Image (cartoon, helix red, strand yellow):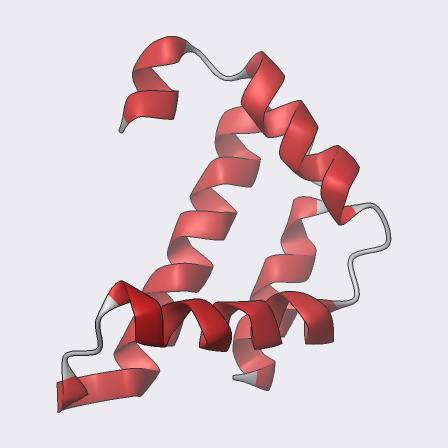
Length: 79
């Protein structure tokens, strides 16, 4: 999971909201892959992802999330 935290740190230097969102999604996919064949539900993945977010030590994680939310197009936000 610490490798996932390293990946998540990539949102700091990224400048485009879409790039930041892709980093978050890819990090979450990495967490799911580590969980492997256990087919974890979202309730099980959330604590793992929180662990990754805490260990990534992104200083401005809230600002990053607000930036992604405000400057992403509606199509991207909906998936």
